[in-house]
Every structure is written in structure tokens, then in C-alpha cells.
Image (tube, rainbow over all chains, first blue to last red; front, side, top):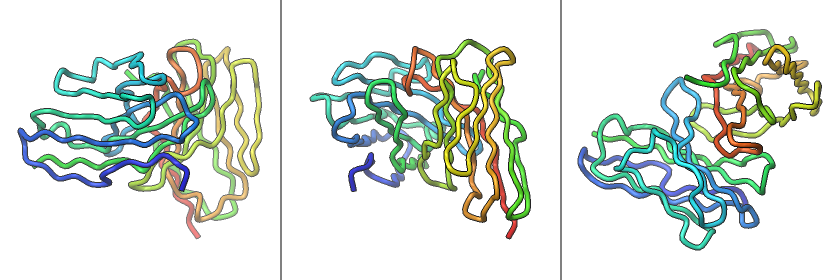
Length: 112
Length: 113
């Protein structure tokens, strides 16, 4: 499978705990994006990397959220001190330059 | 507020009929993209249309773009049960491709067998 992969697919955590998600983009893609989607809504942009550089961050990305792409390949999204409002599907996508983005299957986070 | 807004929010048609979904947006764009999402799954890219293009086809899909009206439409011809999904339009914010794509709330399409 050479598509975008995300791990884990599902995560249940207690409020206040930290969680980390991983995204492996398509290998030749230099751009990587994180989105968040809640039920009945479209995806909301969180942040974007070009190679290892984080170029844009949405104001939705509070201080509790941090994303890295250390070697310009895979990326991690960490949420510290999770809150119930963080419950959502977290989507990762990758693209090559200005072409269409390919999305992973997402990580569904439930904060209890 | 969201850049793209799809209309209608929900659409139910009989298999074999054509389905038309519309998208309106607020600011100038470099391109507009349509995506499909099956329940609980990731998004699948359908078509990208650039601001200097007016129409694009891909199989049973036809997309039009009217930059003067800031609107786009997606037509699915000869619909099939497998077309049941949510469809989103997305516009670029920062200059092209998917960097900072802004999505609407989507149109939920149901194809009745």
C-alpha cells in the first residue's frame, strides 16, 4: 500500500492525558498537512509542512497542539492535556508541490 | 467562517439519475477541488479545476467553475449506489494545491437503488 497511512486508526483517552498520532505520507510528496474533522463538518486546516519546515499553523492549533516532521518524511501530531472538545477525526494528507492532496484514513480520537 | 459552502446540504435521488451539487466561495482562488468522503473514511480527491478553466470532465464527473459568480458545480451523471457519500468543495488559501485548503460542510448524497 503506497498511500498515506495514519496510526493509530482509533484512540480512546482520558481527559488530561497526552496523545500522539503518526502520519506516513506518500514517499515522493514534499508537502504534508493535518486537518481536524468533527461530525457533520468539513475538514478544518490545522497545519502544513513543506519538507521538514512547518510553514503555516491555523489559529485552531492551540498551545496544547504540536506537530513535527523531523526528517521531512513522517509527521507526528501531539495533543497535550486532552479535553473533550478535542474529540474528532484527525486527517493527514500529502501532496507534491501544488498538485492534489491525498488523504489518509484518519485517526479517530475520543476523549472520555 | 468557511470559504466554501456546498448546496444542497443533502440530496437523495434514484439510481441512474444525475446529481448536481453547487459550491460558493468568498474570496479569489487559484484553484478549486472536489473531494468525496464515505462515512468514517478519509477523503478521496475527484477533480481540481484552476481559476483559468471553466469546465473539466473525469469519467461520469463534470465540474464547472464561474469565477465571476464565485461558484462551482459538480455533476455526477448516471448515478450509482456506490456514489452515496459526502462531497466537499475546497478552495486554496495560500496559493495553490492543498496548502491550507478550506473545506465546506459538504453535500450528503444518497443514491436510492
